[in-house]
Length: 247
Ligand code: PGA
Image (cartoon, rainbow, N blue to C red; front, side, top):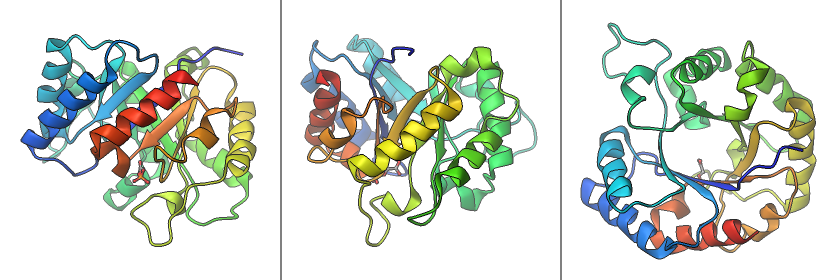
């Protein structure tokens, strides 16, 4: 099996002022110190990508990367308000694609598939989200969605992919949200691993906190986590990174 370095993605969504983003990044770097073994991706809003990247470079923190929360599938053109891979290329190493909160903006699996291929073309590593709307949906549906998301992606690019299993019902902003159980997760991620092979990383996202992350990190088919609301609290986020890094 391909060995994956553990990964933690901080999805800040539409949160933080410039001052918040600066303090959060500095606090994370300070608290991580030199012992961090995990690859950590900070995904701030577009306008803070550059400042966050500058702080990371200035403080010389290794294994800390910047990711965009989405991008357009075209390179340039009359798409008011949109950002392309070509623009992101020099700033980010990763891009989140297909997060369920992007669906209202037209991100169908077909669109996300175009974005995945465009990101790869520009050497930006795609972090691709998939997850069911309601509990007890058969895993086969998730695998079908993955087929659509990854359609036409060359096998030789699979090692650049990160796949996130993030059930919509588990995202903390949803009413009655709760994280999956370790066993429930293993069933799904084992099936995903079998389906996509050893190369892509597989992460779990949905209500991950410092107190529940331990139940996910011992699952062999899980390489890390995506953290939403808990990533906005430096102390808790660093605790999650330390637990993942030590796993
Ligand atoms: P959450 O968000 O950790 O707040 O549930 C995760 C996400 O939506 O990526």
